[in-house]
Image (cartoon, rainbow, N blue to C red):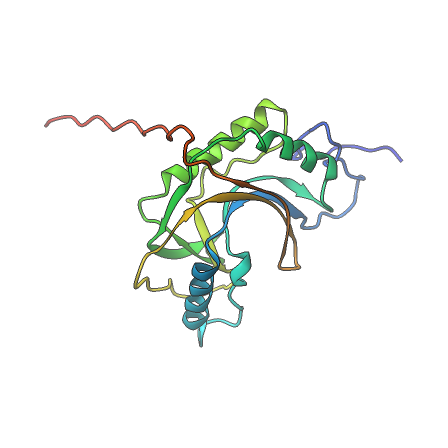
Length: 218
């Protein structure tokens, strides 16, 4: 039987994107870079989500140790791609970036209003800058990456929650990310398999400042 490639799939030198023809599509697991809150803060987020969901929703809040902010997804796979993971780890060893301050002061529904998440109303621009840094490094080495430029950096508290009110924020959730991780999120298993963890460097060059918008006097 010959192999063909679906038009919607990307072509990379590792071969994981090729599939047998006429096989029904199914959801796959994701290889992705993430930031995670500290363990104490993750427990607070989880607890607040559980309280908020009481009498509103039957879905459990996401486990505290799995709460994360996605930076970018490399691709979706049926199983962890060993060759790609090794190549990615070699590239990440050369990344130098400062720790990232993160603030979450709002809640809302993301993913076609299916998931309850925390985010910052004014955005977390340094998170986006670091994600771009990762993307450029991967692209230079011809490694797959999917840039999520249309989604504000956020931490999902409840997946597939359906109808639920946004969660009142009585205090900001804030931390300084001291490391970033490469994880394989097993679809349908509520499980992250870690394949890399790298510390930020306080002595790395500062993130570039965003250009200020010009204002016209009327």
